Amino acid sequence: MPALDGRAIIVTGAGRGLGRAYAVAIAAAGGRVLVCDAQAQGVAETVESIREAGGTAHPYVARLSDQTSARMLVAECIERFGALDGLVANAGVLNPGPAREQDQNTVDQTLQTNIAAVWHCCVSAMDVMVQAGQGSIVTVVSGAMQGLPGLALYGISKSAVLGLTYGLALELEQTGVRINA
Image 1 (cartoon, rainbow, N blue to C red):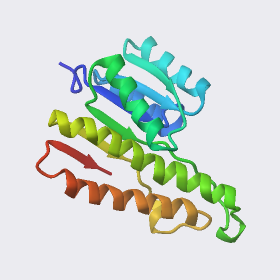
Image 2 (tube, one colour):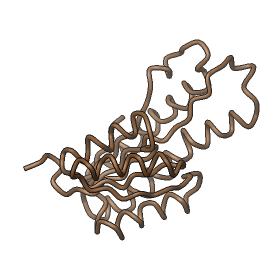
Image 3 (cartoon, one colour):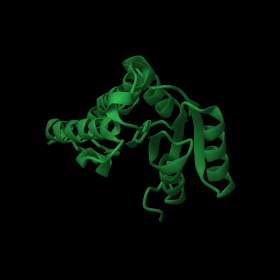
Image 4 (cartoon, rainbow, N blue to C red):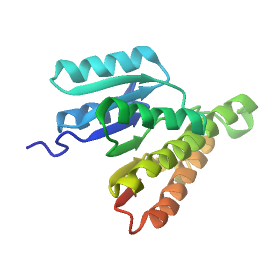
């Protein structure tokens, strides 16, 4: 029996890179994956890859910049698969460069995607999981949070995600829901 036998799991940022790898691995382990990304082509490619390998995946294209979009994502998983068992909050942007050369738009986009979207997705998933008494959330952090040249902006966003994960872990004690970074 596969390790994730039929569990319904959302993966954000699943259109390429690590997100795609997470989604493919979850499907290979028997999970049903809601593949979410802001880029439709990447979503389609990930879903196709999973389905060609015999897995179950459903596409969902969205920018998860606010509470409403995150709640709609969770609702789609429940509508499509009848449950929400897991969330991999992977979506993120990386804009390398010296801190003093980062413009306001880049800063806002990075913080909105790497922190706010993770917050909204985690809280929206928690609402459903706590009610069900079970679930698992995984956030994605980076060694850049310890400081790397040209990655100060990315590093602070990943530090925030780690702090969020620790805080939510304490809130989720005794609920049957766990969160890890």
